[in-house]
Amino acid sequence: MRICLFPGTFDPVTLGHTDIINRAIPLFDKLIIGIGRNVNKVPTFTEDLRLQWIKEIYKNEPKVDAVLYEGLTVNCCKEVGANFILRGIRYVNDFEYEKAIADMNRSLDPRVETIFLTCLPQFTSVASTLVRDVLKNGGEVSQFLPAVVNESIKSGKY
Image (tube, rainbow, N blue to C red; front, side):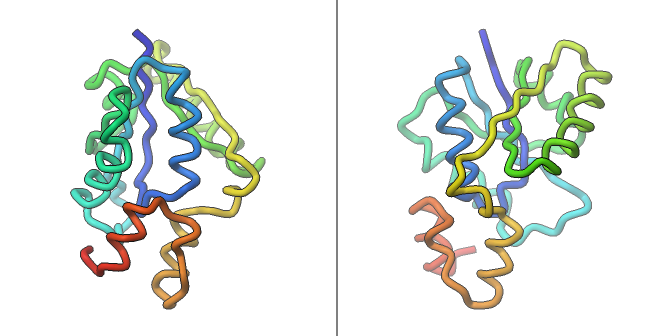
């Protein structure tokens, strides 16, 4: 069985994330979205809310699941039985950074292979960090977010 982990903070889930997820679904038997706790980041949105968003967006897609995890991504892979890690690439510098992480992960567990998908051109500039900045400064972010996430943010329930 081809099980893949797509790790990230998803703070918030963007259309860039869902583009990568949607295009990866046919490639794997199971795609697990891993919401990682990053000690270097203070999230804007709670872990539970981010998990809820993903579960709501993919409620009708049995191949997609989501988990919260802490620590090494390869350890999460072991816990969920994943032999693949999925990463989205927007720019060339993303690849350089992600390749270094992929090489480290492969050193830690040679059974785990990293798969890179480039995002579609319309999502190249959609990054959670930028979306949070626009949101914090009162800007309109709905064009960057799935409807579920946008509705939740507009309701102020976070």
